[in-house]
Image 1: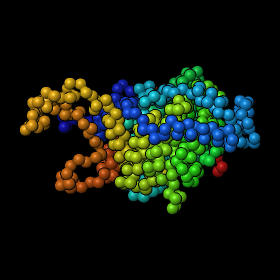
Image 2: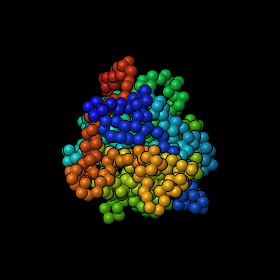
Image 3: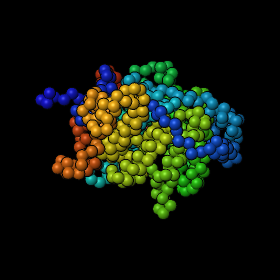
Image 4: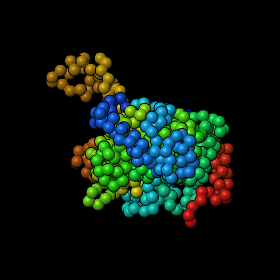
Length: 518
């Protein structure tokens, strides 16, 4: 057996997505985790009502700026008060619109085996998205992102079964001109992944091009494409109290064609939001539901998600902080509000650390567990994020996936099963007070899958670890990253589909791609 060539893990169909192991690492199979815990709810019923009333008063008395002419016309048509770019809307209308939003929906990519479900008690994890910079241990410093680095992070996105969707660019390919960057990176994404993909709402061309490429990859006609979600977009409000032109435009295009939308205000308490966490969450809720109400007015039942990115700043420097106690509580509070409105929720895995060290992991772990505690349905940036989202890092990606697998294992019902074989009375009686459990049949029948098995963590004692080379965690993660790249096989794609995607990209490049300022 040792002389046999190891079988590579592809990531395509024909069961490859469900294989447990690979030549690089032993990992858990693909699954959509179900969060069986009761959510942590720091707000009382009166607290939920206070935040709701505060958000509605903002919408009624202060208003939200919408820098999009068509959106302003739609709000006016709906009976809202429009004064220039300021829109004020009544709470009754807002709640009526939110009532159309589905509490749960699926997104189906080109490989239906990788369909994901948002809502209910499901929780999904995605790759880091949009950092302009890249760091790994081999380079040893922060550099601008490239297409090749982006492609390698996409390989990690496909490879890890605990990563359920491919968010935006895992690192910005700064070496590609912005007018065509979305075309090249989306082509790479279609070649290297078969998971759910994302479109940036940064101008109509980028959104429309990605929707067309998703149609080509899935071999979908317009009717089939628009009948259910096959991709999504995510936008941030421009806090405080503003939605910009391009992001609203992209969401309207997605809503009209039945694709999923996440509205995620980026509210930093003490900077772009009140210094109190309740005030920051209230502002965030007002910004999110104002946009979701618009999208429901345009297409009742459009799949929408309330996102939270509420944290605090370092009041000494003004720098954003993540994974803090305040961040965790804000996420939990927003979870309560999302359930109050009956809309799925998005959170994030995040940290302020600059390198993949202890700070990076405790802050990210805090962020990820607050997502679990809050009842979050989809976690953006769950693997690979550094420096407040300014850096993508493959070692951090691998280390984060260890946490994600631990979270998934934590949620498995078998851990808390209480059947006769789980209570193990006969085993306890057999061993009694003077024996041990290593050799008995009850243990021998279960030991291989009894406990979580890590792929980066090292459980040796110090002497054994030192004798094996004394390799620190980030170095082990780097070796794992390299092993995964060597082991990687792209998921299968029909030759005709590949050619059609290539032809589309070349045609759109010849047409100029998306307009830019340079």
